[in-house]
Image 1 (cartoon, rainbow, N blue to C red):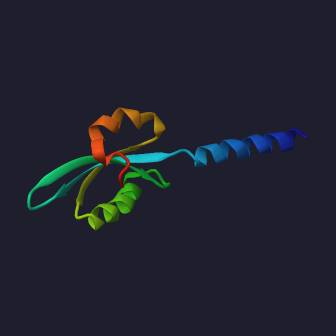
Image 2: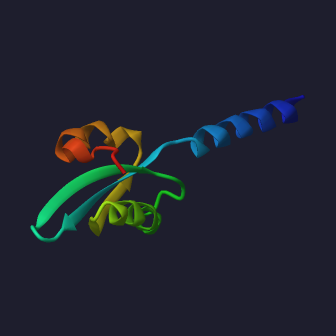
Image 3: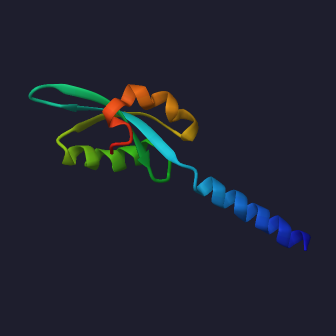
Length: 93
């Protein structure tokens, strides 16, 4: 019985961790005329800079933007502090 309870708790903890949201903040540009923007996007796991580049880059290109760099990745705890800075590009891509 103890083993079943332990296994259940481990599965619950693993599921909760797997469902944790991941976000990346990035910088992008458009030419002619030059326009720059800072944005925040939700990304799928793994929550890494390389993964964020792979996921955000094509979305930006589809709208005529070029990804300059991924500033970093973070979880829900860092989301609210970036909302004002990202403005209209908050969770747009």
